[in-house]
Length: 148
Image 1 (cartoon, rainbow, N blue to C red):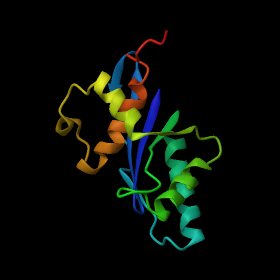
Image 2: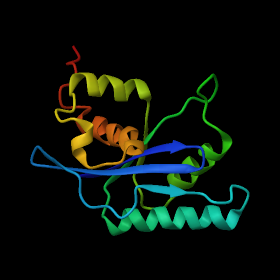
Image 3: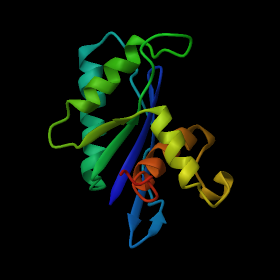
Image 4: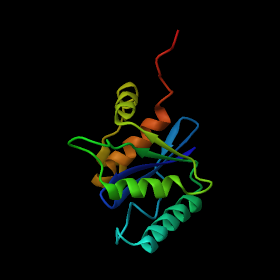
């Protein structure tokens, strides 16, 4: 399964492609690490961003896009541009998108920690949240607590 982890930060979308096959994780080559909405007030640029993201996901046969949820209010609340980008991604036809809360990500990573130092992955530092989001999604059911 190929999962694209997404972190939205202002008008930037940081992405990380992670695949899991037969209990082995891989970080396939991926031509983009970050997509940016250049003009936040332009419908044309928003459509271009959406088309670029859709093409990227189609080219790499991504099975699932997992977006790290941002709070709606409070000190760390996401901005309007970020929610606009999130909606643009969610509205892409034939793209399976889910939102994962920071709490769920943290719980999954606690149960299933990454066993290599992040620096050894070859990813950029700004991709770490996107990587953790994808990894947490892939591992979320691995050692989930049993319900009675």
